[in-house]
Image (cartoon, rainbow, N blue to C red; front, side, top):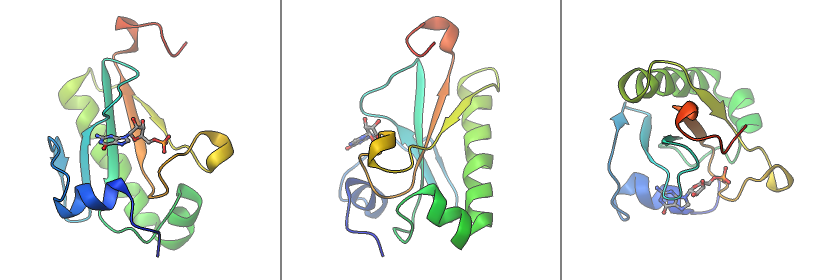
Length: 114
Ligand code: 5GP
């Protein structure tokens, strides 16, 4: 079980967020520090998996559900195209060790990410 993180507090409702999508096992909400016009975090409700390597090994169907939620976010908030980023480990830029995907879209509006 992962340590308690800001994302488990968001999942429990302790920290309020604007929920953009929710399924039984996943929630999505805007990143607090957006790097693109659309920058949404897709987060499993369980805090069992610290990163995508653990999630892929432990529950591939939950990983597939996260991709489906990302697809829905991009359909609703962009033209359906999106970049999906998992930072996997501290040296890869991961700062919160509760697995999450960054959904990045509408990049033509800002050239920040190349
Ligand atoms: P990581 O670097 O771990 O892949 O991404 C963590 C992301 O969580 C960062 O992009 C950061 O801006 C975002 N973040 C950190 N704290 C909060 C918060 O309290 N609320 C929201 N909505 N996003 C957060």
